[in-house]
Amino acid sequence: MIKKIVDFIIEKYTLIFLFLTAICSIFVIIVYGLGWKEALIRNFLFWNVGIRGLIAFFSNWYSPIAREIARAYGWPLENSFQTDLAATEGAFGILGILSLWFKGDFWFATLLGMCLCMFFSELGSLSRVSKRMRKEKNYALSTSLHLGMRIDLFISLLMISVLVMWKISG
Image (cartoon, rainbow, N blue to C red):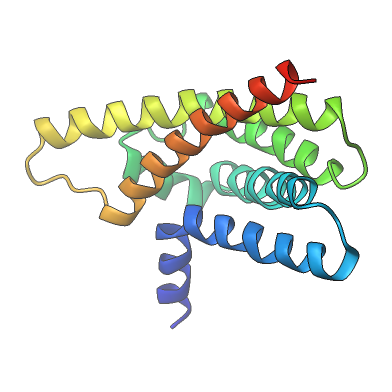
């Protein structure tokens, strides 16, 4: 039972965090009267950058889980690359959590850094997975995990565009 729940969460992580962002934003708007833009950005930073970043840190750092992630993506096992990725995710996770207390340019810098990191990370992962799928006919990444990568790529491009327009409009 627990394994099924964990597998579901892993396969649907992108959609789960977007759902949490939406639900918490609605709650904050209704209960605290926060504007929709501020509520959405604040909750996106907390859930999609903060909590998700800390989970990604732990998952890529903690050896048993990290090995499974490396196998799923076709990365070399126990490579310093994965601990470097974990450190980056952990750093953004802390910035996402701190976004509850700091606003303005801190939000902009955190979002821009995270979006660029996520864009190139997902682009690289999709490229490797696609090459592996073409090369090894029996290799299959779960459909929902593959979809999650594409959604993350789209969201990062969208967020970068929104952030640039936000800063340009002053």
